Image (cartoon, rainbow, N blue to C red; front, top):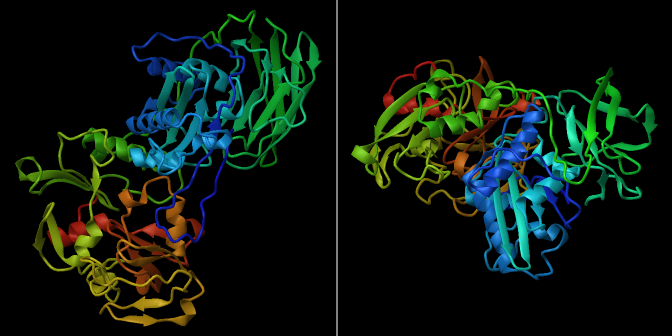
Length: 581
């Protein structure tokens, strides 16, 4: 069963993240086998090799194991084992956990992945066949469950399983480090052109892709469009032995089935028969027609296969020179976030920046030799405090508390050691200081920021944001700004409200906001700043690690942005403008 949940709005908790679709195997149905690749030592690696064989046939990047997804999947399998027989573990409840129950690791699939340290977008398949390989065979022979495995956006995977007497469960968590509505390749068809050993029948799944159909129907065929624009599927024609085969065909409307044409013969397919499928429609008014063929299995023992050369997957984005010279953990973190922007596959603001502009050793008491490696980006700084630490931990590379330090006026040189240098006289928004002399600075925020459990604000969720802040740090009110946004969340730890424009934006991001942004340490304030030479109102709010800005005059997709905190911090700490990347 699959489900998509949209993020709740206006909650009073900051830690609210987007839930992604869930996939569920409800019953052990007849299984279609798959061509087995070379055997690996780990049985899960062998299953992964099978999945990656399928993806290679489609020209997709292979998936790779991610330790956090492994931990999340195995943790949920263990929870199922410890609570076997709980009536809540049925239907979509099979994906849920109840707080306080044995083995609890997170209420939802997304919560469990976050708790294990995964910061991307997650999807989940669950089988109860007693065999991970059998469940994957079943997944690929369905529609909803198949699409999780052959979506080019999911590139990371984790496995978990329990097979103990009557307790049998297989959990696959797949992850997308970054999410985009488009992907490469634009068209993904299953079964791929030239596939042999295709199954004959489909007994259905939940949710039902063909309401009203009389099952079993023929093996399901899918064509998904990942390209730009709007696609309209109009007709599907299935041919075998010179005759037209009656089909059911419809466009999906679920999270992963949208922009997908789902097709099946009205009756099971014939064994050992070559079928040719043609799908016609329009993309943004331009007609398209796609035709491919496959052969069904001669018998129950024939496995999926595909003769001929394997398509080559599109290359990953090349690393920029600064990142290429960095630690591998930094490379991986940058590639799985900003690599998509560099590749042109994601249209959004940088999370870090296009490249490092400085790689330095900075004093830090707890690091080996008393200094740690840091990498400066436009938006932040990556740090490796203990190079001999656990590289599987999401905190092996940390994201500095730079905003807090600039407001407090102290450089952190150890877990509990600081060097006082005074708050940063660097504008929080707009052009550099020489061209933006009247804009508030980080120093202007010192009197309203919580940096030592001070300056806490009451919970004012629902109130309009109309407070202003000038360079002297004086707070005022501008009623004409009240219509832009309200306060939508309150962080009880630091005692600050979060503007709705920032809260809503944060809940839509694929990463953990505590890791990337941190907790709010000021209220949101309107400031006058000169942006590209033009004075205008900009809403700013300081968080521990980042500073968010909202500029109403910008285009919608660029109204909320992260400040250039990495560059600001470097200028403050070293007393000179940062070098160009």
